[in-house]
Image (cartoon, rainbow, N blue to C red; front, top):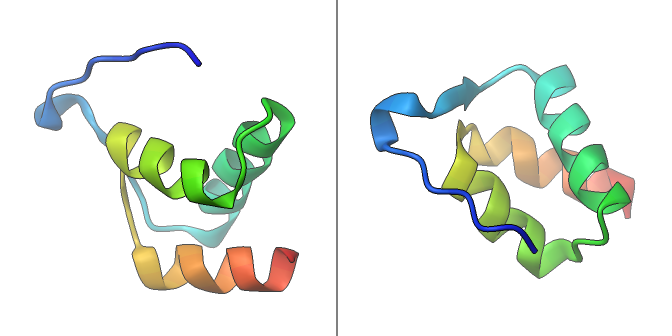
Length: 60
């Protein structure tokens, strides 16, 4: 895994389902499992966690 260091002010907001789904698909394609995905996605983005959980639950 590559280390990324971002200030909170640099984080992009992920509130649209299509954007969250895109991020999830990218992380999956890079080999992240479900536990690693939530850690990685919240480290890089401000995420609507309700939408994230719905997307991950449906994708199972």
